[in-house]
Image (cartoon, rainbow, N blue to C red; front, side):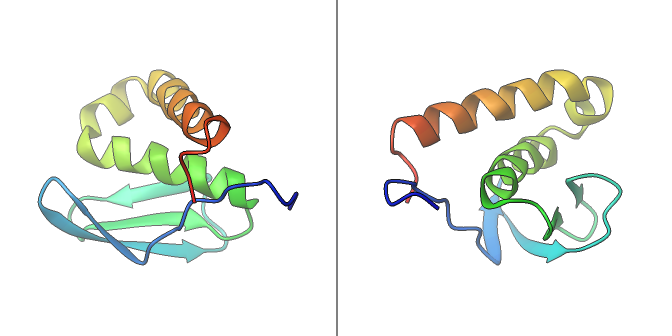
Length: 95
């Protein structure tokens, strides 16, 4: 990574809407990430680059908070996650 590259910490747990949600890095997901609101887990494909993991985490957090948006308009959710990630990363708001 370039010396000025700022990364986001991918936590093992985080709180979303008052719920403790585990974050697990796994291989062999059908996509880059997925979430399970029944068991409060977000899965991210461990084979992704660091920046892809970071953007995927944002995407899955938004989907976890808004499951109907995730299922009904996945493309919009992806665009929102991409925009948020771009602003955070290019303005040095990540670690």
